[in-house]
Length: 148
Image (tube, rainbow, N blue to C red; front, side, top):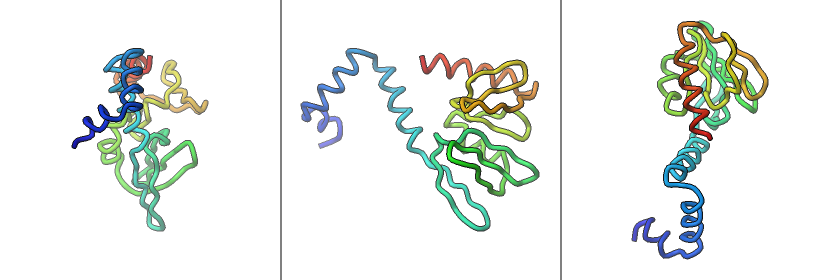
């Protein structure tokens, strides 16, 4: 028996799902499922001394100087060695975008954009270069309409 058959046979779960779909839509259900997946994905932060598993949803932005990457999260700051291109390749599927040559940010963590300054939901501000501005603004706009 597959999972869908289990849902259909579990009356309480079936009623919850039906109620959700009646109040919202299938596209909202897809959004909720994607948000659930995103909040349960892990990011490995490996340095010479330790290996940490960080929830991707907790990452605010990453910044690189030479090959030293600083990972800013809602719980603290972590360090690792690597390339920003590799990190972006891993994190872009979770809503991360390049805002300068040396920084990628979680679009979900952006509160507002004014001129070349990104204000994050925690109140911190980071610079956005002109080269990446249009892509950041478009992605941010799409993300905000997605949340609505």
